[in-house]
Image (tube, rainbow, N blue to C red; front, top):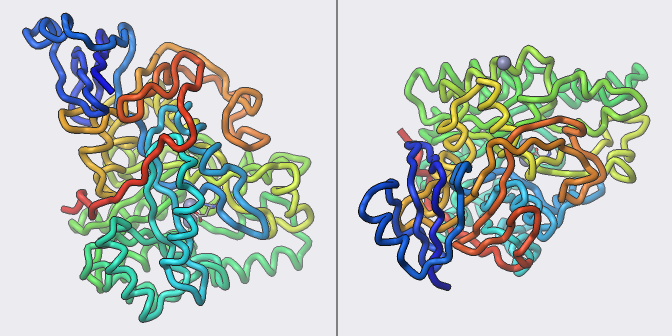
Length: 468
Ligand code: URP
Ligand code: ZN
Ligand code: ZN
Ligand code: ZN
């Protein structure tokens, strides 16, 4: 495959900002040379293909640890396939996703993993791994966990929400956590009290409250923080590490902060939609609010500052997308007249890196923190570091030449996700991926897609590298 030299850029990792050139050989980073040093001199005369990054950042490809391509939900399927969704991710500067293989109740976990492997294999533009969703915790699924951890599926999502679908009760959760404490798996938790929420849903619908905005009203912040608290206490009892996904409520952040102040292995993730959007979007007229229905729900605007603060203090450690797109036409519309039938989820895999760069410009986080939240920590959390998430000798050459001055407007007209709306329609942001390399191959360059479906490889993951 040969050698590539990325010259002239500012290399930004979670640890450093270096005026340095990056040498890649056969898909792997072999070295960084501070400009002006002897190594750079040597490399300049080599046979490497040169990518000029002058005036640009050179950053690790994004690691999105939470996506749902083709997820079956509410009688339909998330509209991005592994092919369209991973290509869109590449356009947005993300070069690794970790998606969720779903166990069907009554069936082995393995059957879900096999099914998701088959959907992804040969179709992905970028490298991908899987978490497993446990929808039926029993003796045999607990045994399967051990085998899956050995094979590189080292994290398992459990749901305190969605009774009758993905839901696990506290006993099942405790058992899965105990198993995780023993086999090294990381428990991921959807922390909302689904039993209580279902009561409020029924009452809202009976009172004629059917619009999308009631999705946000019944899924109360208190029911997110209650579940977060309970998940933390169960993890303590089990002696297990815990990763709470898609945190949106300030009250839930308080629970995480308290646990972390005690030195517990409790980690939190949030998503761009909770940082940039709010219940005001859910209240948009003419059923447009359905575009913003996801769980946990969008919150009142004042929660945003609490999330930004937690991202700075590391009470939230990761920003993933929870990319789970459903078209407005024909899919979100399933819930006209009954908000509880709106498929839950929002698109965003293509937007995350740029929105977080905008947050750098807006003063919410620093540049290295941007890379830490979007690349390095998700890689470490899910056992992919330093192969993914950084630029260092030995790492995969998943690298983005990022133009920090490129202004653009987010829109469904121009995005590459297979969904008929943008959650950020009309939003102007500054910063965009110019050149994207996946294992040393240029797959996006200057507005052209140069990759092919099937370039992406399956990632066998190690256990969590982020434990205290
Ligand atoms: O609304 C959401 N988040 N849909 C995807 C499934 C999940 O709970 O993550
Ligand atoms: Zn969830
Ligand atoms: Zn602010
Ligand atoms: Zn999700």
